[in-house]
Structure formats: C-alpha cells, structure tokens
Image (cartoon, rainbow, N blue to C red; front, side, top):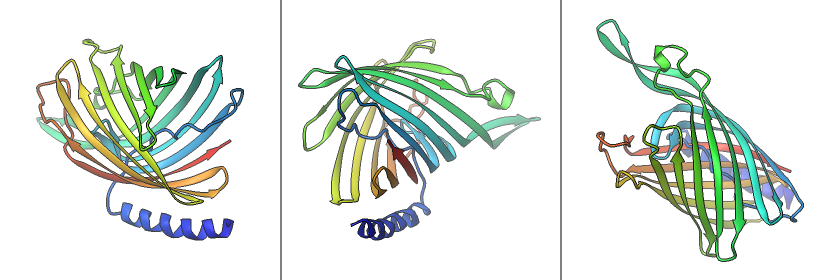
Length: 268
C-alpha cells in the first residue's frame, strides 16, 4: 500500500504542480481538526510557496515563501490553539523618484501570532481568537511607509453538516481608527480519492458590515498526498473574484486573481 501511495501521489502531485507553474498561488488554510483524546496535544509544522500572496481577495504581493507552526489541545471542554506564521514576499508599491512615480517590488516580511479558544455547544462550535500582524520593515524608510503593525480580535461560529463544513467569522480591527470589521462566510468539503489522496474544496465570501459592501469571492482546490503517515504534500490552485471596486470605501478590491502553489506539512 505504501508503494501504491507513493506512485499514485507522485503522478497526481506532479500534474498539479505543472498546472500551477502556469498560474499563481495563495496560502493554504489551517488544517481540518483531527479527533484526539481530550488530554492530547497536537502539533503541525508547515512550509510552502505561493506565486501570489492572496489575502481576503487582496493581492498583497508575489512569490510568497511561508513557514509556520501550530499547536492545539483541550482543557476543561475548551478547545485551545495557537500558532505563528512567517511569510516573505515581493510587495508591489509606488515610490516617488524626483518628479515621477515608480512601481517597485519591495522585499517584505510578515509575522503573524495568533491564538484561539473554542467551545462545542453541540449544535455548533463557538470561538474567539486574536491575531497580531507584525512587519519588521514597518516605517523603516519611506518605501515601507504603507506598512503598519496591527491587531485583530475575531468571533466565530462553525458546524459540520456532513455534506460540508460551514463557518462564519467576524474580524474586528482593534488598532484601526474606525475599528471596522471584516466578515467571512466559508464552506469546505473533503473527498477521499484513495487511502493516500484527498481532494479538498473550499469557498468563501467576504463582507464589510459597517460599509455595507461585499469584498471578494474566493475558491480553492487542494490535493493532499499523504506520502508518509504524518506528512503530506498539498499542491493547490485558487481563484478570487472581486465583488466591488469602490475605491472610495474602506475596501480596495484587487481585481480577479488566479493563483497556485504547494504546501508541505508534518503533524505529530
């Protein structure tokens, strides 16, 4: 069976990566929860490449290289999780050179630190979490003047309906002057193709409640190849359709995007 998994997985991963080389990429979502004994603590390490940093429908830059670590467990019926994510990418920016503006690619780094507490209510799971976005180059010179460290608190509801898993999250910017929030409704489903291959499909729509404005509709298809028991390679493609191009509001749409990449993760 192991040889079968390696052979089938190699063919599938190779074909997906070849298709991805002609397009672009987006960071992979957090792994689906795995049933564990209540006292167990699980860890995951992951790294990957995306030809575009696609975040909430916004094109933040090209050639994203990322690495992260996540830990999850339970305590007194509470689900606890935390992690760190680090990405390096080429951010597009416009700088003034003399009397003219120039479009440049800036080497940019980002560190995200996050934690979450969740509680299973039976008919759904409620969660609250915190994210800190840190940019080492923030305000280092005028070229990086648009970077700014920020913080978010988010509140979520989720439920697995069997045919699909659904979630609704509200992200509240606690650093912004207007404290505007971002709401996201997401659906996902996994299809087992073979004992070592799974097809994961997800889609989400973003909305700004305070502005009364939709942001983007993003969908993603990933192929998980479990080439060994605790590790998997996940090539993916994703597409995002801008639902608004209103530059006078709090959201600046990035236009329609098509991206691709691959993630390698190890769990223990």
